[in-house]
Length: 332
Image 1 (cartoon, rainbow, N blue to C red):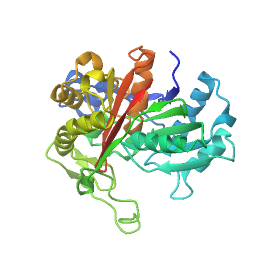
Image 2 (image 1 turned 45 degrees about the vertical axis):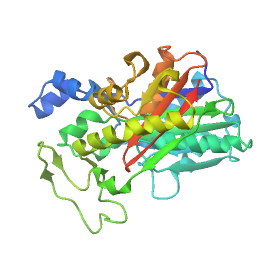
Image 3 (image 1 turned 30 degrees about the vertical axis):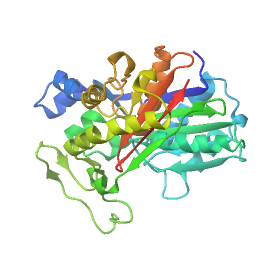
């Protein structure tokens, strides 16, 4: 099926299976990990492979698959919290690496789980000016590099990936709903290493949480229980607000694709909101939670599996680090 949303994604070759985690940590089984996360394996970037590398590879796959004329791309947006440098913006470097025109705009969006939704809303605004026709969104994160080697909970959930989404002025993108609660910023955080707590002034010490995970302020940390409760509280109203803003009902939507955070959590959300199983698409079993790339990857797989047909209305919703949440409805 051809769609005005052209999508490709890249997964690093290294994989970590549930069996690998059992051998490393013990105390659980591969089946238990799958039951609690919905994940069987996740991909991890190579030692010298960073987020921009994954994004570039995803874009190259997109160009090849869709025989894309790179000169037709008017704008580039890169979504990541794993930039190459503090400056310059990584999107500028990617423009050069991909051989895109120097007559385009390019910038980064520094956001995690909801990053793709923010990028899509910016794209809608740019396309509405009638100045641009084709905008390339790249999403990529290599979060596994920031997880403590002994943080077994986070290692069981997150994987690395890059995705490329080419959005044209023929795409139908609905109205957006957003939310932000910075008071919950510590629920998912890598505290040390930036300007508030630079490594030149402070380094973290290992400590163990109540679940036996080793944590350290130099690494990414997530308060899983708090995140779970935040999501169950926030997402149902997010979905209703998206529907209201687009004058749609739950029954009008052909497919729901949420941020692929955790299979156990997604099933709770599906039941709480009342979404029929056949209208709820989940794709994280073999890739894990890839942060800003989860929705593009799931959207691509839903197209590949023909879960989406011409004229389908797809509700997209994301939630997570920030705390932030947002979503919209697109028509394929």
